[in-house]
Image (cartoon, rainbow, N blue to C red):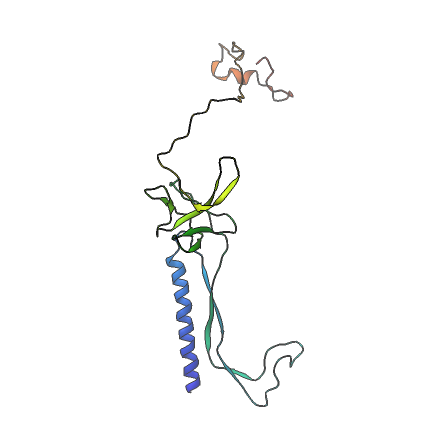
Length: 208
């Protein structure tokens, strides 16, 4: 009787912990960068009954330990599922997202941390920071085009770039022939349709 009550108590406790993980996932549906968590349960303990057979590999088609009486369940582990989440649009130009594997590296000035959340905002000095104040790290290119060292991402909000003259322009367009060859005084609204020939290789001739 006591064993049955104990098994029921462990089941309720395991179910409660599993529900906590599930409700936490639901509560963080709109949390940027949040990763879903899953619960894995395992057998708590078990006892063997005498005369009920041997243990592992006792049967050729079964690998179940025979003659065992379970004594309850426990939460074995709570794992984070690092699968790719959906990319959402934003009206803030400093918001970023990672498509695929990887993390943003952020720092408090001493320690390094990693996050998938890309909701960064510049502070008064132009350093991009997380809502909790951690600075985003990145590589800055040198003036000669080489890759520099890892440092805080800083963008001067009042900085300017020198003007550069346009050196090349590519333009694709149709030139006006100077005369409307599809005009019709008798049927002005369907003049182009009157000269359209769907059976020809060019339904409209070059002169049209």
